[in-house]
Amino acid sequence: MTIAGFVLGFLLLTLLGVLAGSLTGLSPGLHVNNVAALVLATRAAWTSVLVGLVPEASVNPADAGLFLSCFLLAAAGSHAVFDFVPTVFLGAPTEDTALATLPGHRLLLVGQGAKAVALAARGALLGTGFAVVALLPLRFLLADPINLADRFRPWTPAFLVFVLGAILASELRGRARLRRVVRAAWVQALAALLGVATLRGPTLIDPDTALFPLFSGLFGIPTLLIGIRSHAGRIPYQRQEPLRGVSTDDARSALRGTFAGAFVSWLPGLSGGAAATLACIGTKKAMGPSQFMVVLGAVSTSTALLSVAVLFVIHRARSGAAAAVRGLLGDLAPWSSLGAAPMSLVVLMASAVLATAIAAPLATRIGQSLARRWSRVDSRRICGLALLAVLALLAVATGPFGVALAGLATLVGVVPIALRVRRVHLMAALLVPVLLTYAAIGV
Image (cartoon, rainbow, N blue to C red; front, side):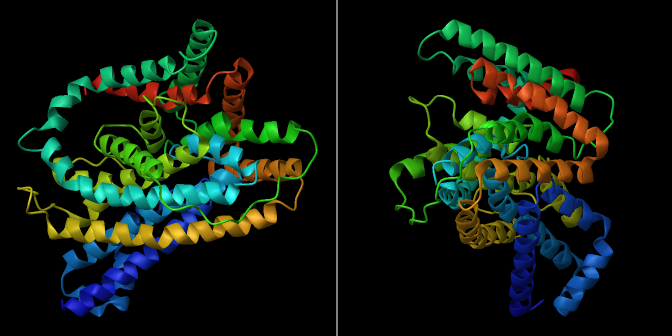
């Protein structure tokens, strides 16, 4: 294949990936994993389309697999950015953005909804840049000579217990510390029971879609119900002032998010939401909603990028996109030395960087456009319509059992609000089932 043909195929498939990621990101309930499964199931048809776009791809089937992998990684990167738009404006979180619901709505209700999306996009850009820089250190740590991935595997259950304990310890501030810790432990127990019943119990819902009703009920629907019960009034005027320049705090928050994303990209079973939990542990003071959005943006894109990079290092897929890339590329070229990264990995990283660079300003523009319209409508009406939209999406995506699960999760989701403890403890719904899974198989 000529250089011109390769560049053309790379650009076309990356742009198509950005389009696919924008559609899944802006549609609550859809995930880039759905796109990955579709591509694998219809690979022959996709290859035919690719050959029509880039005739030279028919010469070498490996090139076709690489181009389709670029498409998937671009879709994953752009999805990670666009996913914050419905999270902020509709309160329909996924497992990766569940923790963004509260700070995003907090900013929306003080006239800064567009800022919330823009800060997440900024964090996504910074996180992508930091993730590229982290590639070599991550390779050094996980494979020869340190081999941290293999050494750490037996300690995975203990690490998850540590995470749960660290989240509990975050309540040890201010007055009535012991009371808040006890209440937080109760919230964790309820969430854990619900998570275990959902993810390890009888399969009434497709496991690939079960997290949507679970996290919508734990985080999204309670937020919307609070909005409906609030006093009548309009959502404050959404200000459209430009963001200040990138500050040291932004860089520090994005670095924390990237570090957590890098760690979770190879640790079995944890999601971007769990990575955000890790990133916010150990701060000297409570992190404000603005910096929290930067952290979450960095976590989302760095996890998407590095989970594929880790595939070349330890040959284990930690995400749906990474598993699909492995299926498309077949036997992966070994990353034998620090300075000899496989060319396919370099191309995939370039696709992810380009996709994020395109998606971030587009998501910011969409957030600004929505914010202008949101401020003209009664806040209770907006919350009511958003609740109906989420319920409709749940019914379509997961059926009556999904709606029932979301209702049950909502009952658990309002408990920390009533007990006045942080809702991050609800992440036990995911952490405990993962802990039990890896404890049972001995990692």
